Image (cartoon, rainbow, N blue to C red; front, side, top):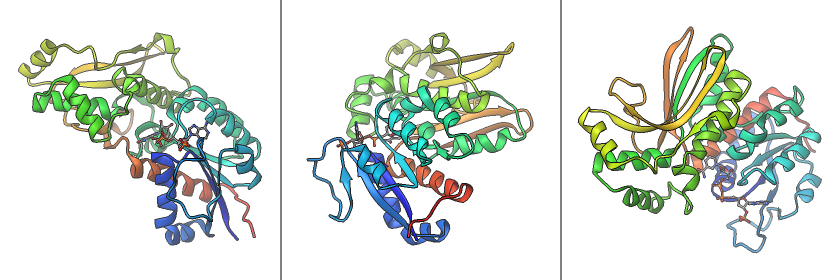
Length: 323
Ligand SMILES: NC(=O)c1ccc[n+]([C@@H]2O[C@H](COP(=O)([O-])OP(=O)(O)OC[C@H]3O[C@@H](n4cnc5c(N)ncnc54)[C@H](OP(=O)(O)O)[C@@H]3O)[C@@H](O)[C@H]2O)c1
């Protein structure tokens, strides 16, 4: 008897999932109650060299993945499509899905959750702060609490650049190049430094916490690329730090959200967060203020969140086992 899993996308995150399924095989088998069989990997470019045994089925045809009848699909492709269409088809076939794809999930998460209903599990912890378990924690809190306000550092690249400028006196360009050299920033860093990446994550948080998103065009979205040298100097002179903050709260019954650089005094819960970390500071009506901090990107932290979701789904939903 086995549990069949497929991986869509075999870049940084997909390879991380593969690595965890291999290195934790015995442990996962024990927790899942049966061995996990990797029944296929979907890629875009079949001619790329991959470090995979010949026994692993690799294809560029999604229909061939579905033909394997997986129980669970890990999705780690970039962009809205084809991820959304692929997951829609999977849910139609009662396949549980776990995604790291924030652009897709910010746009279509609500649709997928509604489509899945109670029958199919959807894991999306990895979309919002990679390995930092903010969605799981919020889900638990929401059983008893109302969350009145959220402020978060959701983009590790921006936080790394701001930290380097302020603590090491680097220029913006120099800090960005260092982030790229160290593998934190993409070759095209637009989504990070313009604030779009944090925006998508904030919309996913909004959907979870408030069961809706504000109209996207009403949300101020500013990145870190327009901060002036004077603004950095002023913040430093006040003993404060500039940080890129995504925030959301309910004001007069309406969702008020923004993504922008803000000056934080030392008393602020997010003030100590330097480097590539992500962090969320929230206020629950019963728990009060709470801050969670950790890795907001990276191969193993992101893949860890996906495999954690995988186990949760196996433990919460009936999964047919293949003989
Ligand atoms: N990297 C992180 O730290 C991180 C953290 C949190 C969330 N995420 C999210 O995780 C997802 C994957 O990120 P990544 O960093 O792993 O990206 P990546 O390294 O660029 O890998 C993307 C993978 O998707 C495959 N792919 C692209 N288009 C496809 C298509 N049309 N059909 C099938 N496969 C396709 C690519 O195939 P080829 O190999 O053939 O090119 C590649 O294997 C993204 O949505 C990202 O936002 C990433």
